[in-house]
Amino acid sequence: MEKPNNYSLQVRASLTFAFVVMAPFTTFILLTLKGLPTFAISHVEQVLIWVYGVTWIPALLSGLLLSAIVSNLLNQTDYFHRPYDFGRCFSLGAITGALTEALATGRYRWVSHRPISGFWIAGAMIAGCLAGAFITPLVLWRFSRSR
Image (cartoon, rainbow, N blue to C red; front, side):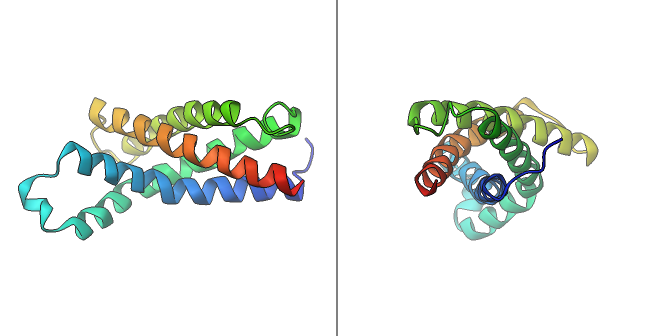
């Protein structure tokens, strides 16, 4: 097994950190767009903190998975970043973000003995898709320019 280079570690760290920040925030935005209950409207800050508390572990696991997949693809092919291709990076981020977030959320809820519902998995897929589609092209664009 080959040792990851500095470039690969930077991509992994950037994707993981950005996903941990963006996926819960995207979940909060989706909940807000869906319509918060009347009792929660006056406590939006507490709702944001609650969303981060509930979703940060699945987001971390998902970010680690996403970064491993993207980093391995970058090491094996120049298809996504040399020359930089926004459309491919967007699709890669959206698909892998959705799948990894759904997988991590389902696994986390199962391990923590919380009910697994279609609502949580669907929300995780949407949040993962949006966060991955936003983050992956930006990270890969930044690193393709620095190379």
